[in-house]
Image 1 (cartoon, helix red, strand yellow):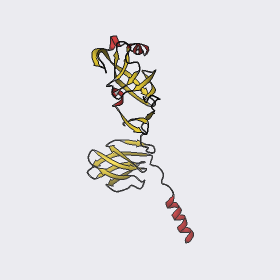
Image 2: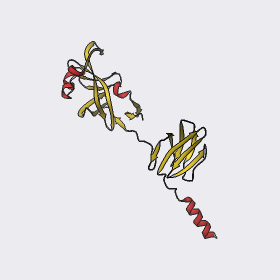
Image 3: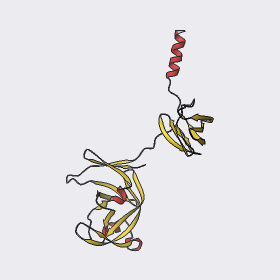
Image 4: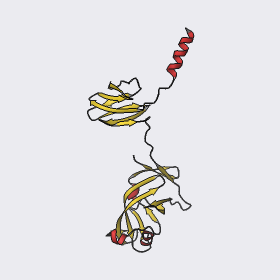
Length: 212
């Protein structure tokens, strides 16, 4: 008998198999109808299915589930295939140079660019020579305007960049301005890129992270 209890205890301690597929087929206040690995389950809030899926909350619009220890909100007809994993958000750490400036290498429309991170710039900004090197036909595709700099108001061309990438973070359709002349000397990574992301300081590093 002692050996039997030990076997049962070992079986209980074995990890449950990961759920492979969950779909929502019905939603009600406080209840949800789920299909879990081919088996249909009706769960009330607080109940856990034999497969280990727990219903945390439900209404007519969505259900909040705990799947493999992680929370996931699902709507009617939505489905998760494979063992659920929380989405990973790309992030980049930018360290200051000797002058205390934050510089990083990225790309604009596939062309390599050395950026100066400038949280005070409203847009990604560059001078005319930099725009030509990147193949940006700002005179044809740009919109004329004026912009204020630290010392003057200057004519600019407003353009939309197809793709801007820094590390593993890629944003599309990012607004930028091209200034006539040689200013700014660096391509400024401004708020038209940064405000679509999360930013925080970690010691001396500036951490830029995807929002979703």
